[in-house]
Length: 471
Image 1 (cartoon, rainbow, N blue to C red):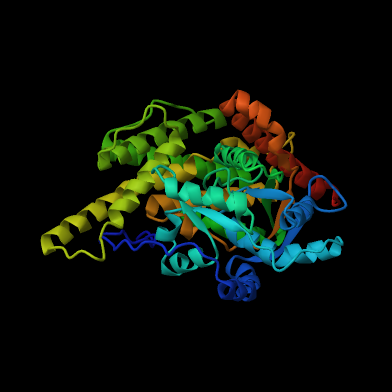
Image 2 (cartoon, one colour):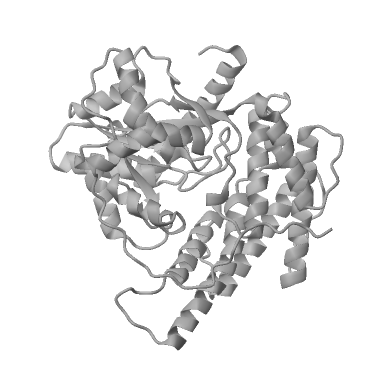
């Protein structure tokens, strides 16, 4: 019997690069989204509910309180949200536009109008997201940024929104999706730096608003009644890898799948490029070392295919950003205003096709960087929670799909879940300005480290709530 082919089609044609419309909020589009959003979250993304909790257990939720102060002109507010799944912008948009006012009313706080936030997104989202996303993003006030290109105009626009805009700005300090909710693999310094820039500019203008960064942690609580779906997803992965189904626990089957996918990936890179990492062993530490070695091989092959010289100081994700940007630039390379010859078009198509195949290396590293063999070990010696099992199944499915030609837009949403958003302890920036003036990098790093700890505290608070069934 022939193996079933995974359904992903390579890009082999260059596309026209049409610039995004300038970011400008459309009240009509926001009203439309408020109407559609509950149905999309329930039936498109499979959410049963969205909850807002407060890690500080205050009478008035910190998000509600800070939003009121922002509307009253007392504060400037940056919403720093975790980004472990990929659907956070949809969840937070619904939370800000719909749920926040209801929560404020319950807490006896008056908020004006419909609360809204302006999201920062990677410029590539508008490319892989398709025409509808490209149309929608600027009309809800989203602001694009480049990870690797100099973008002084974009940074200037963001600083202006943080300093003077009528809506808070929302961004992910992780820089991109991080694929795990209970750990925080990596934060970038940009969020903290923007907070200090805002405080510095307010000082120069003689303004006395306080500047807050509010960490918002999001977690999916998967419905245990979806265990059958999880088992079916594991069976599909086993079939894709030509593995026999065995009578074992779900964590053991997932561990076996991880090893099989790893071995198949190592074999692919050795047979195709003559590269194999000299790391052996099947324990968790050895597996992580093998995955890391394979990621470096993949990045090097992607860079070689595009003629890129690796930056010595760049970490893995910075190299991913650079590869991604270069690939999309080659795919979206045609100028609508310029006529080209048939041969030029053929060359552009060839560049686009080669970029798509080079992007396969990047897509693999993009998710594999965040995978951790210890994640299924659970916490404090306990067996892994159903949430961790579900996250691992989704991530392994995503990893296999990326090898086959997919990307983040193909992530599975078949499991029913509820979203829990936890407002962490706000970080006040202006009180840290003396430290910033003494040593800017050290002050930014300190805020970033505090933010990471707050996210970890939120995850702990949620685990305690789930264990004790109270908050």
